[in-house]
Amino acid sequence: MSYKYLQQKREYIMDKIVIGIDPSKHHHQALILGPDRLQIGKTFSFRHSSEGFQIKLWNYIQKYIDDLDKSNIVFAIEASTDVWQNLAYYLVRSGHLVVLVSPRITWSSRRLPDQSYSKTDPKDALVIAQAACSGYYSVFKIHTENQEALRTLAITYSKLKKNLTQTKARIRSVVSKYFPEFISILSPGTDTAGYLLRHYLHAEDYHNLDVQKEAPVILKISKQQHGVDTLVKLKKAAQKTIGIPRSGTEIEIDRIVLDAWLNTHDTIKSQLDVIEKRLHALAGQTDYFHILTSLKGISSTLAALFIAEVVDLYRYDHYKQIQKLAGLDIQMSQSGSYRGRGKISHMGNRRLRWIIYLMTRETVKYIPEVQIKYLKRQIKRVNYTKNVIACTSPLLQLIMALVRDRRVYGYREESIAQIVQLKNKYEKERKKRSRVA
Image 1: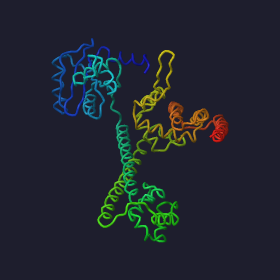
Image 2: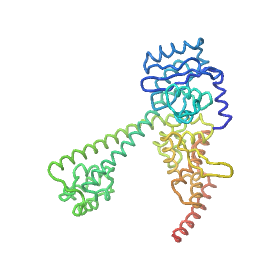
Image 3: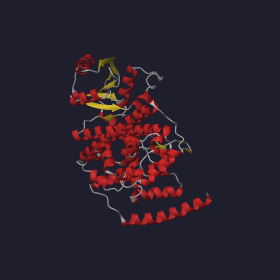
Image 4: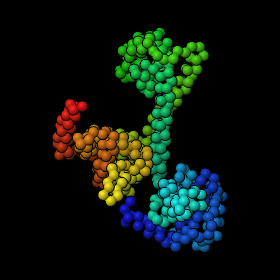
């Protein structure tokens, strides 16, 4: 954050009364700082309820402030978990200015008032108000109906994807106990594996498998990827399995457990399909959805998720603002003549960071402006993950340029020519390294 921008934020609330609020599940703690940045009255608490918001809060404020002019009051709230949202929405809809302070700022500033890291709600309310006065805040705004809906869907999509990954791991865990060879032949997360596991779990089940009967079924399910050969491999593997032998009630219980995880897997997948369709429809109504999807490698789902997290691309003046929001900005370590290695801060939106990484990982294969930096770094030093992360800068820079000009992406001849040269150089370098190894 530049000093000039920080100074602007300080001046924005300079002559206003700042009310710092430390939110919690049942009670919120508050403290008032006057325009001279001195505390007014004592700290107070009010309940997380309609009565607390509409009566108790204002009764306490009126004890210390005579003029309740909305333009003269700023509410600074710590944005921790979800407990702040009800209060923030209520205050904004009531016409008040609400600013949000990061919990990280609260944690790092907690030592300033009394030179100790002791934590109390009154102290946190003071720290939150002081942080806002210092300019370490972001203004809370209620977005449009579509933007709010898109963000809610994106968060749900992200959580369901995580649940799906967990469920796949649980299915794999069950199969690896009783027929571990299955995993090396078929991935448990595929439709083909799901069909077979519903009918055949233990190695003994595959001894009597009718290959000619099941082959046409899995050919259709797998879209011609698996057939007789796969079933024959499974039958042979079942003859020499190292899986745990089961019998009687154990087989019945294993079937119940696996069916539970398979049903959970299918339910999550069907819900994800519903959410994806709605995401595409809502994101398609924005001006920049088609701009993003014009970049080969960025799917409709990735574009929709990206739009949901950044909310409004027109409000950003520079691509580094999005980098900082995602925690992809470079954290430097420098003192005197010492220069430490730069690394990304990770202090930001994890979902957005994951989305930008996936977008970069795909566009690095097709988009010259991104591919050029990747190849140059790979020629200098091979490190796939780090080099992909480094390429997030040219990708975001390109996206911001396209959005600013309101145009879709088009390939440039000079970039393509440079790519050909770099690819040839990279292949020579790769062969040289393989010979040395």
